[in-house]
Length: 195
Image 1 (tube, rainbow, N blue to C red):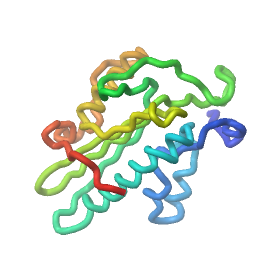
Image 2: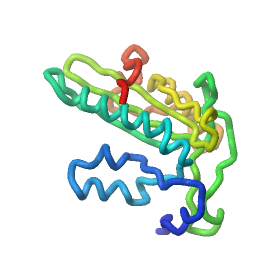
Image 3: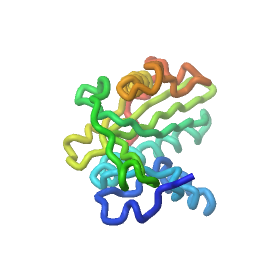
Image 4: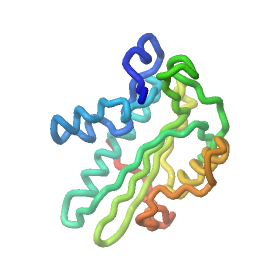
Protein backbone atom coordinates (compact mmCIF):
# COMPACT_ATOMS: atom_id res chain seq x y z
CA UNK A 1 0.00 0.00 0.00
CA UNK A 2 1.38 3.40 -0.98
CA UNK A 3 0.64 6.35 1.23
CA UNK A 4 1.37 10.03 1.05
CA UNK A 5 4.32 11.51 2.87
CA UNK A 6 5.64 14.87 4.00
CA UNK A 7 7.66 14.98 0.78
CA UNK A 8 4.44 15.37 -1.24
CA UNK A 9 3.47 18.44 0.81
CA UNK A 10 6.91 20.07 0.56
CA UNK A 11 6.80 23.39 -1.33
CA UNK A 12 3.05 23.03 -1.90
CA UNK A 13 0.42 25.64 -0.94
CA UNK A 14 -1.45 23.12 1.25
CA UNK A 15 -1.55 22.15 4.91
CA UNK A 16 -1.60 18.50 5.92
CA UNK A 17 -5.05 19.09 7.39
CA UNK A 18 -6.63 16.79 9.95
CA UNK A 19 -10.00 15.12 9.46
CA UNK A 20 -10.26 14.46 13.21
CA UNK A 21 -8.62 17.53 14.81
CA UNK A 22 -5.71 16.82 17.15
CA UNK A 23 -7.30 18.96 19.89
CA UNK A 24 -10.52 16.97 19.70
CA UNK A 25 -8.75 13.64 20.17
CA UNK A 26 -6.10 14.65 22.70
CA UNK A 27 -7.30 12.85 25.85
CA UNK A 28 -4.11 10.76 25.90
CA UNK A 29 -0.77 10.77 24.01
CA UNK A 30 -1.59 7.74 21.82
CA UNK A 31 -4.89 9.22 20.66
CA UNK A 32 -3.22 12.56 19.92
CA UNK A 33 -0.40 10.87 17.98
CA UNK A 34 -2.93 8.86 15.94
CA UNK A 35 -4.37 12.06 14.46
CA UNK A 36 -1.09 12.73 12.63
CA UNK A 37 -1.21 9.59 10.45
CA UNK A 38 -1.91 10.16 6.76
CA UNK A 39 -5.14 8.19 7.00
CA UNK A 40 -6.42 11.20 9.00
CA UNK A 41 -5.04 13.93 6.74
CA UNK A 42 -5.97 15.60 3.49
CA UNK A 43 -4.52 18.58 1.62
CA UNK A 44 -6.24 21.74 2.85
CA UNK A 45 -5.69 25.30 1.75
CA UNK A 46 -4.29 27.32 4.68
CA UNK A 47 -7.05 29.94 4.21
CA UNK A 48 -9.61 27.17 4.74
CA UNK A 49 -7.82 25.01 7.34
CA UNK A 50 -6.65 27.87 9.58
CA UNK A 51 -9.69 30.06 8.98
CA UNK A 52 -13.38 29.23 8.87
CA UNK A 53 -12.86 25.45 9.17
CA UNK A 54 -10.78 25.95 12.33
CA UNK A 55 -13.48 28.23 13.78
CA UNK A 56 -16.14 25.57 13.21
CA UNK A 57 -13.91 22.90 14.75
CA UNK A 58 -13.78 25.03 17.93
CA UNK A 59 -17.55 25.48 17.91
CA UNK A 60 -18.04 21.72 17.51
CA UNK A 61 -15.75 21.08 20.52
CA UNK A 62 -17.85 23.50 22.62
CA UNK A 63 -21.01 21.68 21.53
CA UNK A 64 -19.40 18.31 22.31
CA UNK A 65 -18.93 19.48 25.90
CA UNK A 66 -22.55 20.65 26.07
CA UNK A 67 -23.86 17.38 24.63
CA UNK A 68 -21.85 15.02 26.79
CA UNK A 69 -21.85 16.79 30.18
CA UNK A 70 -24.53 17.74 32.70
CA UNK A 71 -27.74 16.17 33.96
CA UNK A 72 -29.06 15.38 30.46
CA UNK A 73 -25.71 14.18 29.11
CA UNK A 74 -25.69 12.27 25.88
CA UNK A 75 -23.41 10.85 23.23
CA UNK A 76 -22.18 12.92 20.30
CA UNK A 77 -21.52 11.07 17.05
CA UNK A 78 -19.29 12.95 14.60
CA UNK A 79 -18.43 12.13 11.00
CA UNK A 80 -16.01 14.18 8.92
CA UNK A 81 -15.38 13.73 5.23
CA UNK A 82 -14.41 15.20 1.91
CA UNK A 83 -16.27 15.92 -1.29
CA UNK A 84 -15.04 16.71 -4.76
CA UNK A 85 -17.52 19.33 -5.87
CA UNK A 86 -17.92 22.91 -4.69
CA UNK A 87 -20.91 23.96 -2.63
CA UNK A 88 -22.91 26.89 -3.93
CA UNK A 89 -23.94 30.10 -2.15
CA UNK A 90 -27.49 28.89 -1.65
CA UNK A 91 -26.28 25.67 0.04
CA UNK A 92 -27.99 23.50 -2.56
CA UNK A 93 -26.13 20.89 -4.52
CA UNK A 94 -22.58 20.66 -5.72
CA UNK A 95 -20.93 22.24 -8.72
CA UNK A 96 -18.77 19.73 -10.53
CA UNK A 97 -15.11 20.82 -10.58
CA UNK A 98 -11.98 18.93 -11.62
CA UNK A 99 -10.24 16.80 -9.01
CA UNK A 100 -6.61 17.84 -8.62
CA UNK A 101 -3.77 15.93 -7.00
CA UNK A 102 -0.78 16.64 -4.82
CA UNK A 103 2.13 14.78 -6.32
CA UNK A 104 2.15 13.56 -9.89
CA UNK A 105 -1.24 12.15 -10.91
CA UNK A 106 -0.96 8.57 -12.06
CA UNK A 107 2.40 8.15 -10.32
CA UNK A 108 2.04 6.72 -6.84
CA UNK A 109 1.91 7.93 -4.23
CA UNK A 110 -0.22 10.98 -4.92
CA UNK A 111 -3.05 12.49 -2.93
CA UNK A 112 -6.41 13.69 -4.27
CA UNK A 113 -7.18 17.24 -3.06
CA UNK A 114 -10.74 17.55 -1.76
CA UNK A 115 -12.63 20.50 -3.17
CA UNK A 116 -14.79 20.72 -0.04
CA UNK A 117 -14.95 19.29 3.47
CA UNK A 118 -17.79 18.60 5.87
CA UNK A 119 -18.62 17.42 9.37
CA UNK A 120 -21.95 16.01 10.54
CA UNK A 121 -22.88 15.56 14.18
CA UNK A 122 -25.73 13.97 16.10
CA UNK A 123 -26.20 14.40 19.86
CA UNK A 124 -28.31 11.57 21.27
CA UNK A 125 -29.71 12.30 24.73
CA UNK A 126 -32.28 10.37 26.79
CA UNK A 127 -34.89 13.04 26.03
CA UNK A 128 -34.12 13.89 22.43
CA UNK A 129 -31.79 14.22 19.48
CA UNK A 130 -30.15 17.28 17.94
CA UNK A 131 -28.07 17.18 14.78
CA UNK A 132 -26.07 19.56 12.58
CA UNK A 133 -23.74 19.65 9.60
CA UNK A 134 -21.13 22.10 8.36
CA UNK A 135 -19.55 22.27 4.93
CA UNK A 136 -17.15 24.58 3.13
CA UNK A 137 -15.05 24.82 -0.01
CA UNK A 138 -11.34 24.03 0.35
CA UNK A 139 -10.19 27.00 -1.72
CA UNK A 140 -7.61 29.79 -1.63
CA UNK A 141 -9.96 32.80 -1.80
CA UNK A 142 -11.71 33.38 1.54
CA UNK A 143 -14.96 34.67 0.03
CA UNK A 144 -15.33 31.45 -1.98
CA UNK A 145 -15.04 29.13 1.04
CA UNK A 146 -18.79 29.58 1.70
CA UNK A 147 -18.54 27.78 5.05
CA UNK A 148 -22.04 27.15 6.34
CA UNK A 149 -24.00 25.21 8.89
CA UNK A 150 -26.91 23.24 7.44
CA UNK A 151 -29.19 20.38 8.55
CA UNK A 152 -27.85 16.83 8.18
CA UNK A 153 -30.57 16.15 5.58
CA UNK A 154 -29.24 19.08 3.54
CA UNK A 155 -25.70 17.72 3.67
CA UNK A 156 -26.92 14.28 2.58
CA UNK A 157 -28.54 15.90 -0.46
CA UNK A 158 -25.35 17.79 -1.31
CA UNK A 159 -23.25 14.63 -0.97
CA UNK A 160 -25.77 12.75 -3.12
CA UNK A 161 -25.16 15.33 -5.86
CA UNK A 162 -21.41 14.86 -5.46
CA UNK A 163 -21.71 11.06 -5.74
CA UNK A 164 -23.90 11.44 -8.85
CA UNK A 165 -21.43 13.90 -10.44
CA UNK A 166 -18.57 11.47 -9.85
CA UNK A 167 -20.68 8.52 -11.09
CA UNK A 168 -19.58 6.38 -8.14
CA UNK A 169 -22.89 5.33 -6.64
CA UNK A 170 -26.49 6.24 -6.01
CA UNK A 171 -27.78 9.64 -4.97
CA UNK A 172 -29.02 8.32 -1.62
CA UNK A 173 -26.58 9.19 1.16
CA UNK A 174 -27.44 8.23 4.73
CA UNK A 175 -24.82 9.47 7.20
CA UNK A 176 -26.45 8.00 10.31
CA UNK A 177 -28.09 4.73 9.19
CA UNK A 178 -28.20 3.43 12.76
CA UNK A 179 -30.38 6.34 13.90
CA UNK A 180 -32.59 7.88 11.22
CA UNK A 181 -33.72 10.59 13.67
CA UNK A 182 -30.29 12.23 13.20
CA UNK A 183 -31.31 13.08 9.62
CA UNK A 184 -34.78 14.36 10.55
CA UNK A 185 -35.02 18.07 9.77
CA UNK A 186 -37.12 18.57 12.92
CA UNK A 187 -34.07 17.61 15.00
CA UNK A 188 -31.81 20.28 13.49
CA UNK A 189 -29.73 21.99 16.20
CA UNK A 190 -29.92 25.45 14.73
CA UNK A 191 -26.65 27.32 15.37
CA UNK A 192 -23.63 25.73 17.00
CA UNK A 193 -22.44 27.65 20.08
CA UNK A 194 -19.65 30.21 19.71
CA UNK A 195 -16.13 28.85 19.95
